[in-house]
Each structure stands twice: as structure tokens, then as C-alpha cells.
Image 1 (cartoon, rainbow, N blue to C red):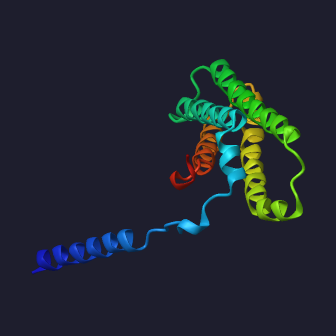
Image 2: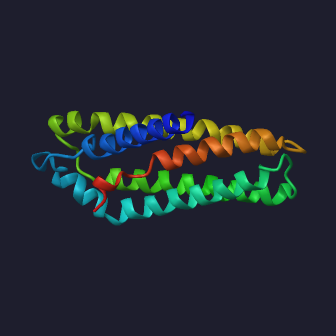
Length: 172
């Protein structure tokens, strides 16, 4: 009897989840396509290179996380070098963004208003990344870095970088 109830409960739960997945999908209506300017921006070499540096930063962060995951950091110099590459990737990404923005013309008020939520989101994500980068830098400057602290900030950075990935519906 208990097995039947358990099987029935899992079946109902499975059906509920499947129906939610099928019927609850967020589909972008065809009349709400991305503006041409955004599409052009995502095809630009600046944007592509920035995404490469973001992926590079994500890769170095994963390595740093892995180095500290067992409770101690075996090679502190290697961890510091890994962090230096992570930081360099973020600096290059910022440099390319500034270069791209300087080459763009001044957008009109309507475009600025339309871009405002996206820019605020980008700024908040960048601020969150910088908090963890500064914390990692401080932790790795110690003579014997605290592996738990490095692991915690590395894990948070990995999640932040993953969150920053462009949704599939926005990719070209």
C-alpha cells in the first residue's frame, strides 16, 4: 500500500513538473524581437572578444575554486598566478567595453531609456563580480591564504559568471 502511494505521488509530481515545463515556457513573441542595434552589438568583434575574456575569467575562477576545494592550497604561488590571470581577463574585458563605448555615437534619449534596465543590470553584475575579486585579492595576499575563503569567493564568482551568460534566446 505504501509503495503504491509513493509511486502514485512520484507519478503525479512528474506529470505536474512536465506540464509546467511544456506549458510554462517563456517564449518571446515574434513582434518583440531584439532591436537591430542590440543584434549588431552582439555580432561586433568588441562584444565577441569581451565574451571570450569573460569565459577566460570563468575558466581561471574554476581552477582557483578547484585548487582550494580540499581545504588547503597546495601551491600558493600558482593560486596567485591563477588569480592574476583572472583579474587580467576582467581588466581586458573592461578595457574593451570602454573602447567600444567610446567609438559608439551618443544614443538618443529614447534609446537611453530603453537601454537603462540592461545597463543597470550590467553594472550590478559587475559590482558583484568586483566584490569577490577584491576579496580574493585580499585573501591571496596573505602569507598563507585561507583556502575556505578562497573557495567561497571563487564559488560565488563562478555562479556570477554563469549568471552573466547570455540566454539562448538572445544568442545569434
